Image (cartoon, rainbow, N blue to C red; front, side, top):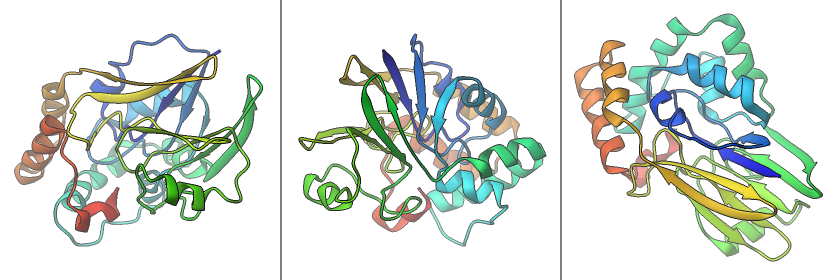
Length: 238
């Protein structure tokens, strides 16, 4: 069985559509929306292809019509794009985002899986990357062969012995210095982290055509073109 893992798409259709993989099952790890401005084909793709999925903090905020608090950096980018989502999305689109479960646990191909956007301790907001000690603490009450997460926009795979933690990285806004679309594949129990080039200029053109203000568009260009990580004081809007 071949399992595709995708996370943090953030309305970036050119990035999502660049993934050219055959797969048996797709797992979605949250954050379909915000930051870019082409949510409809992204939502449609996840509806059609994801067998299991969880809600990210941006999915929740868009569905619940929560305005972005004042801030700079990525908060400013979310503030510039979220109102456009409210204009574009239908009621059924918003319901789809809002009804995604916060966590999911299930079995596939003889292995147990636990999905959450951030961490089991804080499913929406805790920012945790590749730390064996911290993940072991967070997973003390979780019984699963694979724990699949997103949120940090940083791709990693940790083998903790009885449990493997996988973050496929961000499809639509990587922040690990590599601008390519990030995702992961589990095939016959083996984990592979993958990257693929996509047309970043197409994403930026679509944002410009959607009416994103120039300062936010420049920020989006820097972030997407450099695979730039947000400063620590801006990560709460992940």
